[in-house]
Image (cartoon, rainbow, N blue to C red):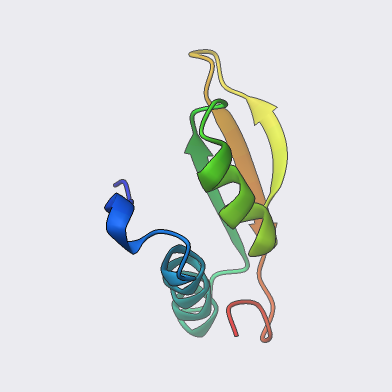
Length: 77
């Protein structure tokens, strides 16, 4: 699954809100960790993910950047 915003909706905090809501839902559903992959040249997405608590963990064999986040009750709020 992929997520993204049309250019007219960027820089309004909507991407951050979407990711935080997904993390909150994940915690409520009993998950302890979240992970994702993104292109290493997608600076906008990487910035949003880092603001939400994700950190780079590795590069996949096909060159994507893998990021992970430990969930907590406050993550996503």
